Length: 223
Ligand SMILES: [Zn+2]
Image (cartoon, rainbow, N blue to C red):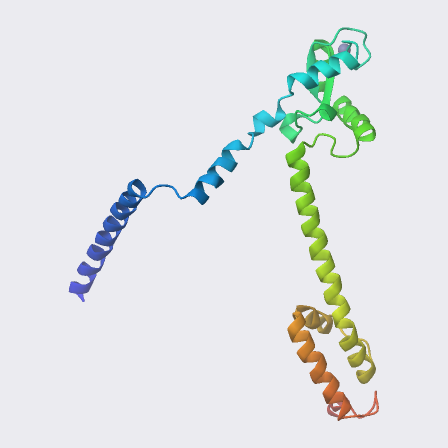
């Protein structure tokens, strides 16, 4: 026993050492495979969060021209800054539809007044649509998630449709609607299981025609 307890940890340490030295050797010897390089390049080419919040100069100059250099609050002063209508801390991006040219005074005020901030968010939502602060990457992610959601919904709907025949079969044979836990049981089956189950029930009912509602086993036992 004592021999074993001594021997075990020693072996573990040895294993650990050889693992790490092997890892280091591997790292320095093997060059990065091309497919991995592609992934790294892809990640590096993606702009950072801070970059995405930055308004491009052309956006700013376009906006200055369109607003005749005035503060968009309507105070009449000249604009000096570009405000993120949806703040960058709330994922507001540096896109034109999220940009508002303002003067120093109005910018300070909006940024410390949640009610006014929200007011402009509402105005921009009405003008440019919900998610007016999205950049291309946001839309890409949003559309991808939306498509995935729709796919799941469609699959769910299809699954419920596939349950219908067997549900109707059981309902009419049993002479009652299915209980919630019974529906859940059917829902838990995948399509293949559903098919097997449907065929089985259908065959069983074909060869065993009992008038619905009477002489069920359950009823006799209850008596
Ligand atoms: Zn102003």
